Length: 325
Image 1 (cartoon, rainbow, N blue to C red):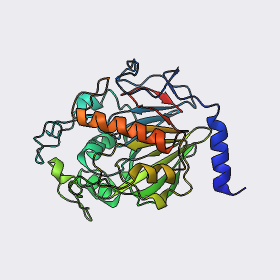
Image 2: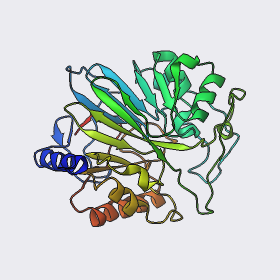
Image 3: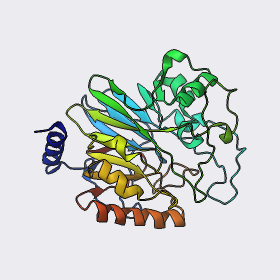
């Protein structure tokens, strides 16, 4: 049996008995307004060795606990107000890291995976890395920005796609990807950093810097693909076939066939989790706040996933709730 067919067979067989759960309860396909209120505390809970949990921190941010190890993906907890959701977007908004919000939630981290370096994905990363000693993986732009914040080069790992990183009980495959485009077919704050700049002061000082995806494979557990933006280089997805896909919601129609290409490229994951659908400039409290236009887009996304991949379960997450796949 070819390796891809074998992986698909094993994944599909496991999925027949798998249960997606939140805090031990079955997690259905409810929208955030229908989901049960979260009882998760902002501080980490006790974990048994070998347990794997996924907690959404809004935007594309995740905390993944694998036994006694913690992996963070695009951790953005400060959720500063730039006016983006009120129609008065201020590109000169100061980068203000809210340690009072971060510290109760980030007691440790082994690695931080950065999909791209826009402020709502990267601005808290240098502080978290300094606090925890975590190694930061990201583009060359993320590497140079890390140096600009005073992180040592020994704590920064530049990747570009194709790398498979072995951490013993789990691995991370880096996937070259693309950033979504706005209605003008443009990317906000485009550009890369090929050398360390002055320490960033405003959100405009954090460019997109190229975009990556990450496939996390847990030994004896799920394989999960993380996106940070709503575009896809589907040829880079061949053979990944994850159990679960964390999929950024599209905010414009300028990227053609985004969901059909993404879901086909990922071989139609058994669970699809919409992310980047929330108003990420408000407090991290459930139910996640969703702008009216984004609520419409979210509902359209859920309907599209069900139409394109009818065997996939759609799980719309709430903040800081422990999900097990």
